[in-house]
Image (tube, rainbow over all chains, first blue to last red; front, side):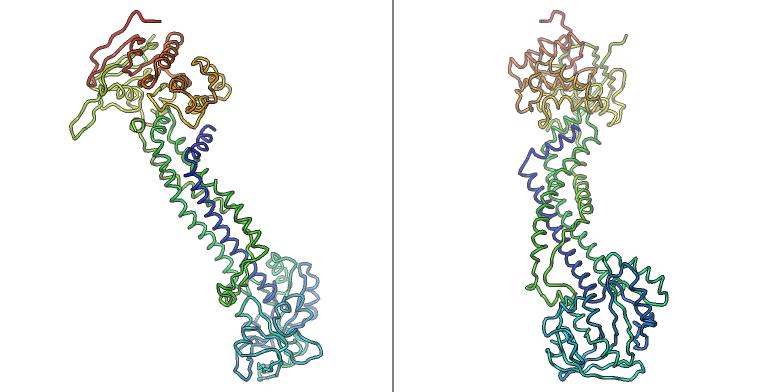
Length: 405
Length: 234
């Protein structure tokens, strides 16, 4: 207990020096937390965009369908399949889609694309595609052969709302089929690669082209919670052993990998910040030890053993280090709360580059509550490592020599 | 019954200065019994502090051995020596005696905590000790709020806190005015008279020498005289 009191009072013997270290730790922690919050916000938005715009929580296909996108590999017994899916309580909504790989041609050129035949009523529930329209409008019931095209593709092909294009693909017999479409709307998601690759038409139009009336290649499921994806996949897989049932993590493994990589990266950044801070802490503690050589010699002479002396140095270092934690945390929390509402606009830093990786140019940081324990552990490890060298110096002191200084 | 507290045989401490061996303590024999009030005197550099350091286990002799209360401290490991000092020897240093961040009470309690004495006993002993040194009203004062004499009295209380076999005091009155020095000496003398606490001082101070029951004179690391006094002033 007395060692605890001594350690606490010792750090305030030189207030300005201690405050510099405490504020350095606070600043380091603030920077580390903000980096984590930005990463977390970016990844949360990316996953949301992936689930609610691109792939949904779960997709169901015939097992071999995604190998070559063969039009004839549509889902068998679709009505009974839908009935069974409706009975699963985790499923909030679903949409059927027909898919075909093909080509979009206009007067300016052509581009390889994926045609997504959708049912607008179902699609509006499972995906936010409708909200991503930046020009034109969604499908209108009275009009035929309408098409929604991504902004990136429209720009590349120099297309605009009202322009006509031709879509070409193979039907289920293997014949090349083409059909003309008029651009009804242009959408823009946070993923420009996806915008460039996908076009949306009515499912009935695509089915007519493919010669598979009333069929679907894909069922997209929207669940009540993101965390239900894997357990629901397991339930579905038990029921439909012959179907390919994939969660968003399997449908977009690069996003899953990115989430893991970002987690590790944020810890590495925190580690680098604290590693740099450790040198400041070591310097401060070393000065504190050297200034108190006689005092330490006296305590050793009186009978303070090396374990207790080490503990004293460790406690002082820990107090200095963790002293900055509440300041760093609270300032990061305040800024984060503000930015979480207002958003951090990175448009000037390269909107196109951000979109090409699937990220929005406005980031809404999210305070990394789940990383508090990890961060504090990092801080404590830093304190321990930082105290080693000054503590060894203190332990090497001989009472007689120390008392003479 | 053997009353021997300190028994030093043929102890020498040699320093190498420019590769020339210099004897700080040269073949010293010293025998101190319980209840002695002994002053080590001699000119600067005569080896007083070195001899005290050797007896206190703060330094090891190059030759000879030192027995404290029947235990040869020259054969102990450094960690055994630390523990031995804690339990057997009280120290009063010339200056920089107290831990500046602790109050007078905490400075004394610190040693007792190191010894593992329980809180209730610590409290009782601390109040008794501060009563003895006449500083009951200064328990919560920091060293910077105490005069030099008061600090040395707290140092005596701290030395006594661990109930040592003897107290080593290295020039305890060196930085004190006459009044403070006399107060400190009165306390130490009273402890010696009433509780038979053994004191071994190194000193230049005639006031300490006058009070000592035995005066040992060192010159160039050797004992040149060892005088026991009979009629001492009260």
